[in-house]
Length: 51
Image (tube, rainbow, N blue to C red; front, top):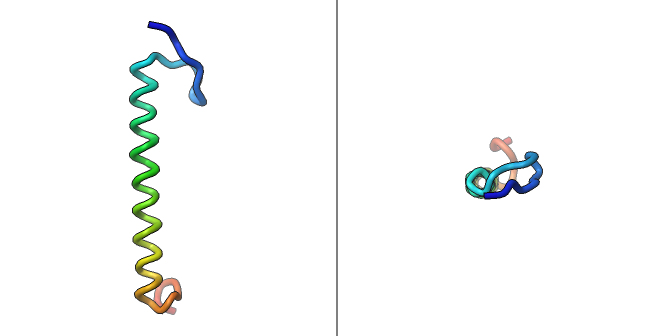
């Protein structure tokens, strides 16, 4: 089992898989937060925080 160079340095295949899963989870979480924020802005007439 070899080491691969990533943005995090040299990692094993297992570590690379875990990091990929984590990055995917974080990107999905951020996407959901953006969608939720935009939805709340739409509910407030397009104005942040209803102002």
